[in-house]
Length: 412
Ligand SMILES: [Zn+2]
Image 1: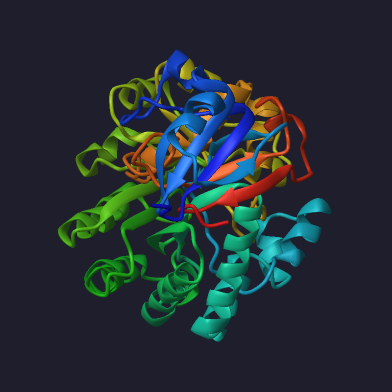
Image 2: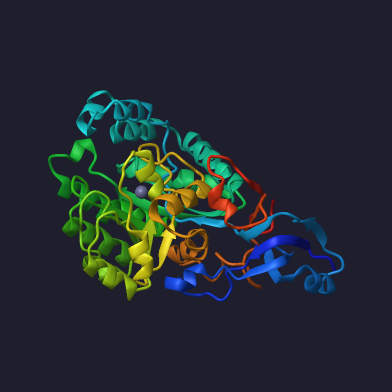
C-alpha cells in the first residue's frame, strides 16, 4: 500500500548525521555520515529508510520519486535561538549605529528595545502571529525546519502571554516544528526600572505559572547580563521555571562574563552567546550535556571584530550549536546558511562542523535529538535540499539562497 510515500533519489551527497542521541563533540562534529548517490524513503511524515539510490529502489517500487541529482540533501536546520515576536524593524538603531551613536543616543532618538516593547504592546495577537508566520516561512525557504521562538518584547503580563499566543498561532499554520520559550526576563521594562526585583517577582509568580498552565511555553530563558538580570535574579527566575515544570536556557556572556557553572543546578539545555568565557567555563561545558549555542550573525551585524571562541570550544570537547538569533535589534536574519558562512569565515569552524552545529547539535539544544537533527529511520522527515553537489558549498555561497526545497514532516 502506498502511504503518502516519497523517495528522494540520486542526491550527490546525502548527509545523514546518523548515529546520535547525544550532542556531538570534538572530531565527531566533522562526521556527517555522507552517502554518495544517496536516497531517503519517507512514509507518513517519517523517514523509513536511508541508503544509496540502488538500495532504496529495491525496497520501494511505488513511492513518488523526487530526483535530487546535483543536490545536497541533509537534515533540515534546527534554529535553536530566535526572537520572532516583534512589530517592526529597528531602522533607527541601524542607521544611528552606523553613524557611531551609542546605546543612550539610540534610545534618545526613539530606537532601542523600548521601540520594540511599544510595538508589541500596541499590536494585536493576530498581527504578531502574521509576522511570526512570515519569519517562519522565510526560515524554511532557507532550509530550516525546526525553530525555537522566544517572547521578550512585551515585558508585562498581558504582552508576554500575547507574544506566546502569537507564536502558538503561527506554529499551527506552519508545517515545521516550533519550540516556544518565555523570555519575560529579557530586560527590565521601563516602568520597573526603579524596582527591578518587583519585575522579577511578577515574572516568577505570575508570568511563568500562567505560561506553564496555558501550555504556551516549553522553556524559560533569561538574559543574565549587566544592565539586564543579575545572576541572583536569574537563579530566582530559573528556579520558578523548574518549579512550574518548564525547562531552562540562558543568554550569558554576550557583553560581560558570568560563570556558567552558577546555573548547573538547572541543567540548562543550552547556554547562548558566550562571547566572554573562561577556561573554567569551557571545562565545565565539556563535561555536561548543556549545548553551547553560538550566534555569530549578531557579532557580524553589530560590526564587531570579535566572535565567540568556537575553535577553542570545539577543540576542548564542548558541544557547539549555531543559531540565527533572529531579532530586530542585533540579528535581523532568518538565514541559517548565512550563519554557517559567518561561522566558517569568522570563527574558523569547518563546513562540516558548522553543519553539525546547525542540525543534530541544534536538536540537542532543544532536547529534540530523538526526533530531529539527523536522517535516520523513525525520525521526522524534516529535510533540506540544496542546489549544490558538495556540502562545503552551503557556507561557501553567501548572501544568496541555494535551498531548493524543504520538507517538514514530509510536507513541502
Ligand atoms: Zn537572543
